[in-house]
Amino acid sequence: MDALELIVDEGRPASAGRFFQLGVDLLALLDEASELPVEWTVTHLETGSALAVIAPPEYAPAEARHLRAVVSDLDSVAHDGPLPDSWTPDAVKAAHRFVAHGQPADVDTDWVPPRLRLVTDDGLDAGPSVSLTPHLLGGLETLQPFEREMPGSVRGTLVGVNVSRGNRASLLLPDRRVLRVSFPTSLREAMRDALLQDVELAGTVRQDGDGRVFKIRTEEVDVLIEPEVRWSDIFGAAPDFTGGMPADEWLKEQRGQA
Image 1: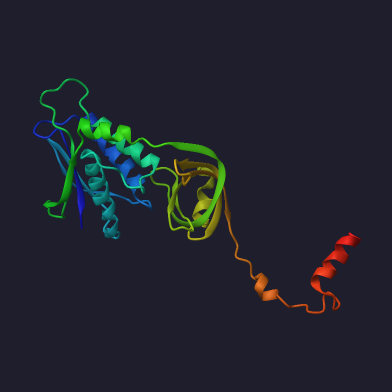
Image 2: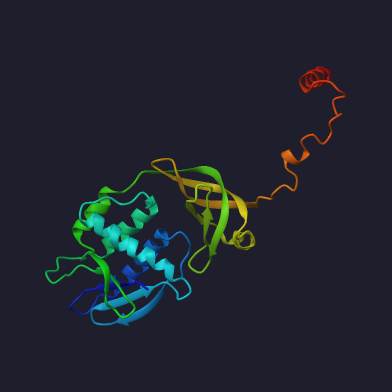
């Protein structure tokens, strides 16, 4: 299973402030990159040059694909390439914040950019690596996307709820995209009860430049109940309802009497 290594101030004692800030920023970026909430775990730590290795929990090894995607996508920007369409405006912002906090606070001739590297369980290289350079920061600045916010509602299947790092949820839309959801503490119980059910969420939606909703701050959740009887089931159930009159004539007569 792949893991992700973050190393800060390589070759010298690390700045605690930079190391911990980058850790928080990295988790925020991974949260934006993954469809469902993932409880990332720390599997290895080293001091001096601060180094941390994070991985998905043992019961969800497939989530390691998000680690690989983040590194390869950032490496693409570092080489003047684009980000994939799957990156939401919030993901781009999280990446920009992460890289910005990795820059030196002052002129520092000994500064070495923090680095992300994919590794195996035993610490060997498992793929590409990317350094948090000023060039990468500049590339992310040019990719800051347009977005807009408005009242609205969305329907889908609630496939994940997480309250351990804020109130977050995931909504699977009919087009198979996963929408990120935030909600107030007052809705925790309602969201948990609605898990794995079809729901309508109402609140404030955020759209990207193509008009696609990528996040909603929900204020109301309604479980959509499947009707027990469909229209097709009752078609022809009362064949003598119109008294033998054609349906269109019967409707005209009834409307005329209204």
